[in-house]
Every structure is written in C-alpha cells, then in structure tokens.
Image (cartoon, rainbow, N blue to C red):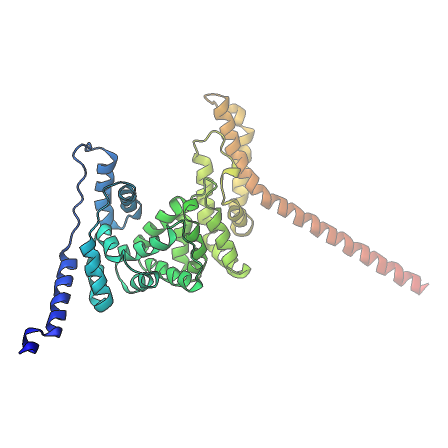
Length: 361
C-alpha cells in the first residue's frame, strides 16, 4: 500500500518532466526602461541584439550583453538555476538537447551559470548550438582575472573553437569578434596557435581577411602565425595567403585618411615584404615600380589643396616604394654577388694558366 502511494520512480519521472518542461518553455523578457528614448544606446543595442542572434553576429550580441552585465538590470532566476542543476546532474542528454534549442544568450547563461569548468568544457563539446559554444569559450577567454594554466583545458577549448570553422559564415563572425580588439583578449591568442594547426587554408584566409592591419594591435596573431608553423609550413601558408595581406595593406596605405599615413602604421609589413620578394611576379613588380616612380616624379604637376595633402600623397607613394625597395635591394645584392663570383672564377682560371705555363717552363 505504501509502495503504491510513494512510488519513487514515478516521483523521479515527475521531477524530470517538470524540470524539462520548465527549462524548455522558459523565456526571458527584457524590458528597456520606459524613460529611455527609442534611439537610446540601450534600445539600439537591444534591436541589434535580436537581429544578431539570428545571424550569429557576436559583436552585436555581446554589445548588448555587456550593457546588461554592467547595469543593474541583469536578469536572474534562481529556480531556473535549480532546475538546470537537477537536469545537468541526472538527465544530461535531455539537458544538452534543451540547450541545443535555446536561441537567447541570457537563457543560455542562466542555464550554465552553475557549471564547473570541466562541466562547461563537456557542454561546449557536446552541444550543437554555436551560441552555447561561444558562451563557454567566452567564460574562459574573456575572464581577465583568471589564468588558464591547465594544458588539457587549453586543448579542449581549441577544439571547441575549431567547431566554428565548420560553417564559413559563423567562423567569420567568430573571428570578427575576437580580432576586432585583439589587445583585449590575450588568452585567445594563447589558444589560437593550436587552432591554426587544426584548420584548413580557407579558414586561415578568413582570419587574415579579418585582421586589423592599420594599427598596432594585430602583432600577436601575426607572431603566432609565424611561431606556430615550421619554416617550411610557414612558407606554404603565408605564400598562399600573403597576397591577401599585401592587397589589404596596399589598399590601407592608398586610401587612408590619416595625413601622416606611412608604412610604420601597419603590423603586417613582414608578410607584405615576404610577398613582394617571394611571390610577386616580375611583371607586377616592374610595373608597380615604374608606376610609383612616375607618380613621384610628376608630383609637381599635380594640384593639391594644401601642403599637408601633398605630403600625405608623397608619404603614401614612398611607403609602397619602400616595401618594393626590399626586392630591389635583394636583386641588386644578387647581381653584385654574381659579378663577384664570376670575377673570382676568372681570377682562378688565370691562376691556373699561370701555374701551367710556369710548370711547362
């Protein structure tokens, strides 16, 4: 009789059913305060947030999330955390399936807020939801006060990051977020070295396209690219991709509105020089040299609004010629070496003739 009234398995099933239903149907309603204007920072960020969720635009998503995190309006729900705790510890598969269906970062944050680091890693690996994966990565990378010293955790995070490369659009948005302000995320670049080993050329080229090369902020990733690969692999990687950096660098120099623009404003110059010396065709090199020399020679024939504009034009042309000059210098050096070697060869032949004549006498 007692067993009929108090059926343990039935109670457990009821708890599971209740928690599953609650987590599945739970939604967070964000209310922007009425006193804010429709064009306020909060309203604009919220609208971009909702659109960003659909397109995995992580910049727009986390612009709004960071506003909430720094305000007094961040949503909390202890009961949601309690239900998540029960599901995570007793019905992990169902817990992951619910997370896979979530389309709101705030709901995801509340559902994983009580997880230990090893549990977060497991969730990040098992979920198919890129929003969940991103939140897991963010937990480790964006926490500036906590160092990641466990090599195994670093490796697992890198594998979660590699998952983003399976979708080109999502991979682009992911890299765009972390390469927007590289100096903010030093821990990201600690992990990126391993990531570069596990992705394809196409995904690496997306990284190169998203790099900011017009300011001193991308040196970390450029150094990582150089340090991660052996010299042979490095040549293959940069050789195939260096034109992307070169084209962006040249476009940056030519179209910069900074009146003081010059070659020193970019972190990509080493790769630019590599392309010019190793990969640029002779025809392209000679054509560019002639074109930029001509533009400098005819600078007095052009009209400029003022001397500042004239100097800016001059700096841009000289900056590009400066980079081209590395190949000019190398070719001149090689020419002199060949002349020297030929000279030494002639001297050696003359000496041999003298020896023969002397012996003959």
